[in-house]
Length: 434
Image (cartoon, rainbow, N blue to C red):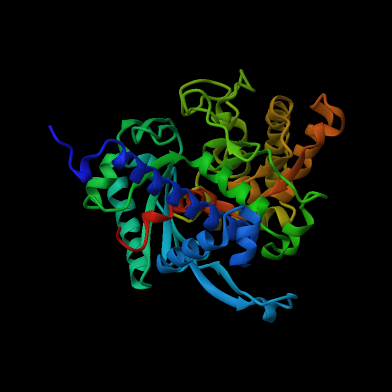
């Protein structure tokens, strides 16, 4: 058999290697601009080690794909020397969508590549008393609304990531167990893909606390200019955070852990179920069927049981969770003794579990998210005291307690960012056709 020119051994391999190399270099340039800000082509070449001609070609393709854009000239920025045109991140052309299922609400958000919020919605819903099919139907409607908002601005949806409060197998797209929802073995990704009409963009699923931790980590990396004054006051002295533990939740309690800038998932992907640490063996029954789990003494249900009567409106799951917590805050501000005692009790138990986590993981920061963040003024001091008194390392192991400013948006923002991260890893996923 005579080989033709196109069938020479190795030709396809060389071409594939070239494509992979260019894809990698596109990623290097795009991520560099994201991390370092506006740069000239010459500066990008110097910083990345790529030659100038290659960088010019890569930048041109990233501009064509709508991922970078031409910015100011260096002379307009006050730079010295021969002026060059700066390039900067162009976030408007591609968006990631995050969607969350929680015990008493559904939520969705879409972020563009530069982190700007395109749409954000949260709908009160008593999910714990609905079947999975009904809940997924309603979530699909929210996702379609978010994708439509992206389409209306001429953008492309990079992907949708679902956040759920339970044990998740991300590789298969299945929810194994969500005790507080009463869900077991639900193929959430397949079910959502079907409802969305088998879209071109990928659909993923992850644990809501993991996604919230990624959002909190991104929040910690953001510059002080993006924070409120309260947020700036919480920054670490050197501004660096590489290891954190996020505590989040409402009825359920979850934890997400980042170490060295990477999410800790555990050997089988089931890490972070801190709400089921057995801290109060003689306590109440948890949604998981066991007794004494941490969330039975620090979860929102525990707080409401102590602070309110059964017919109190703040127990109504049809009301938005932030409205309900705002009422708790109002009562605490007015000095209601029952509310304050309930907060003190939750704060005490929060400190016991929090100190265990700090002893084991020694994070730079322990971040209060979800309902803990909203009630932080009454919970933070107890947690700090427990860390100081119960952590064996000097000065609480150097751990600081910080209130996240993301509130109940953390998981959906983390989900949107997961989808966008795929674009930074492979910019050829969006824009022009190959």
